[in-house]
Length: 268
Image 1: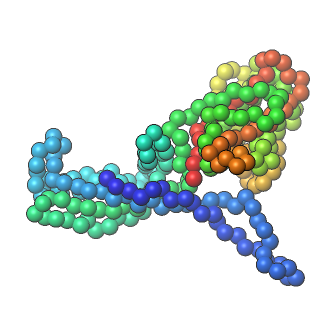
Image 2 (image 1 turned 180 degrees about the vertical axis):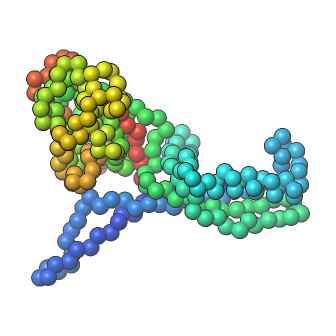
Image 3 (image 1 turned 90 degrees about the horizontal axis):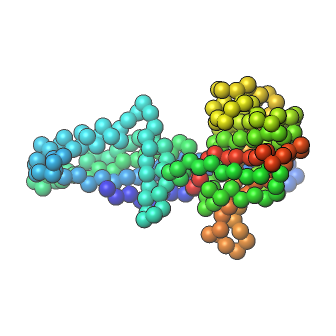
């Protein structure tokens, strides 16, 4: 199988002009657009056992490929690998070329287009990071090296804590729950679904607690329709150094109070 390097996504362009001003208004923080990845498959007439099955087996292999990549009722998981660099994405089948078939040699070549609706490629493993309840510019170490925003993290505060707030340093966006969190209680914030719950056990399951979604306040870019996006920042003069920085704050905390973030790294 051969393929191109996964393409970098563009952004959804927005142009706003006003009378009496040259050009257009500068707008930052635009969302990325979807990308399309081309895959090229080379097929032979080999049977699953490795024997030569000729043109008849080539036809069966083409049908097997169609069954694998032509799925329409769900997204498929696609892995991109370059040495030790491994990225995965949920993709949808878009189209396929007419197979280029060499009948005599029982070989064929077919190209397939896959669309990445969620734009971002992800790390293979979801990790949980533990930080302090009151600390500025903490590095979320498992997300280091990311190039895209992490939009689906789950945040967990462990009490006691009053007015717990988490801020993404790169964008200035923050999320806060006014009010108190008792010792032994945990506040769960699902940024992907914009849901929140308070639980009294050591769990990450929002359904196990009391829904407090209506008590959550979000501020910063795009906060009217999304919760905190953890965004990697590039160190000055070193684009290879990319980290996600967060600032946490709360009052009435003790040594038992803590902040946890469960997420996977994201890549353009």
